[in-house]
Length: 245
Figure 1 (cartoon, one colour):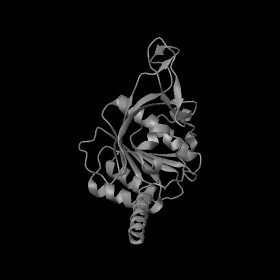
Figure 2 (cartoon, helix red, strand yellow):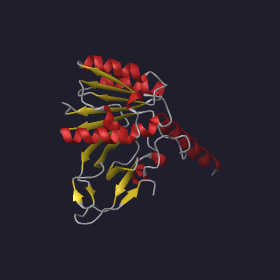
Figure 3 (cartoon, rainbow, N blue to C red):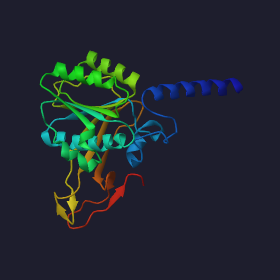
């Protein structure tokens, strides 16, 4: 019996070590920066949103890309409340910086790097991920091969900087060395029973998550935090459930 218990503890310790390298902290939320996400947290081991890893976002339409940017904005807003500045790498100029203000982000704390060539953007992304003083790195890059993704993963493993890679209409979806793959789609929001006018509201799909449970949730952004919308019937004022409840 003692040998069996010792073996079980050894296996559990090894599992926790592996999960720690993937951005999960066993049963400890005190040192987490992204927390109180409610139902969404149940998708991750220890109910812990993975930090210090790479999250991949896929968008096929312009509306989906805008929704993904909003959702990412909420996440990096949480990170920037506790850590240093953020780097945002993009091909061309797509983002309107003042649009990040509702997500508790001061645009002046973001270093925007706008490039024209994918090779240059990948280089800027990799170099940024080597800087451990950053709170997060966001990159809008269309195509990414397995070798490049592995190089990015190695950089993140060393610096523990949380990275969000947003790929718009990628040509192929490889099995990247990333922890999570997301798709964010816009949903109709309501304010005073008026459709289409209100706070951001999305269908958040977690397609892949390492050692977790993929799922789909309807989440909005209201009063500076993620919230779940309980009712979306036209003609009624909607109730929003806070994610922490």
